Length: 125
Image (tube, rainbow, N blue to C red; front, side):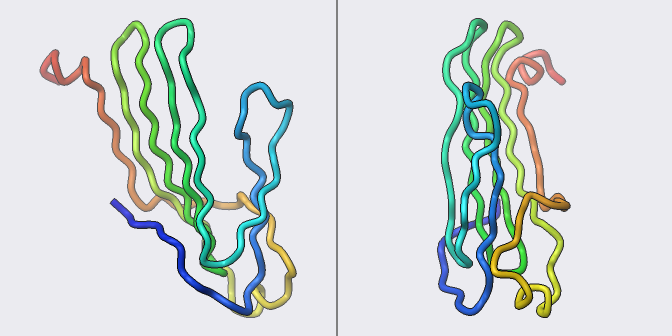
């Protein structure tokens, strides 16, 4: 597991995140994330077959954006969980100084992912 926490960074641009946070809203929402700060929120709820929840966490270091995503869902096939951490490719130091703000998401690189299917485990898979 990767630990993403607040820390202090000065002299670097903010990251603009365009995120889909609500299925009832017609488009992405813009968040401005200061360097060294964390944005986290949860989405989901009950649905016609069970439930589906997601916990989102973003951290901007000043040249790299990290995303952590945890999901937990249950439907007619049983319970299923996923976990993942990704980061954007680094920006060069001169790029960080050129912009007042940097728009994301961009290109993501996987750090770690895993999943758990409870029904598959019960069946011996």
